Image (tube, rainbow, N blue to C red; front, side):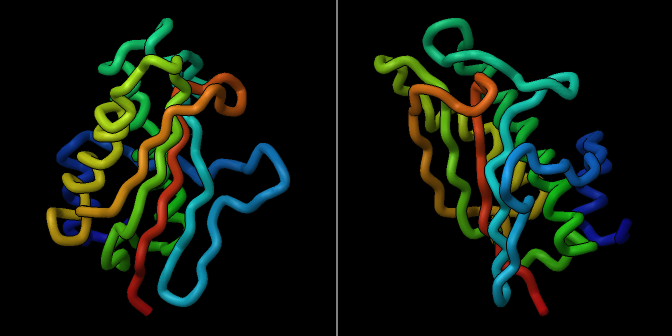
Length: 156
């Protein structure tokens, strides 16, 4: 791995990047077009299995937030595979978060903060601040509690 400040921050946070995950269906983990990388949705996993739950029913906001942070780490692993060096990322452009939640659960934005805040810690305020959407949905593949996708900008 590179010795860029990004990797130093990951090390200081005690984060080890996971390997690139094999897609579970008919898609690719990421697509690069020009200077943008579009990362496919990653579901929350715990101990290598889907982190199952529904916010507002059997999962609380703090647990959902932890799941979103775990997804951010998986997204970083995919971005490392896509770039070869996370130091090449010039901007986290956007995150889209889907939160498996009951109709009356309204804290999707707080759940998603688990991922947003980690990207800010890793890339810094300028590169890590991003646009974002957080939606409550009726279900996510495999019953996962959260799914997040990302768009980042990279240097040539």
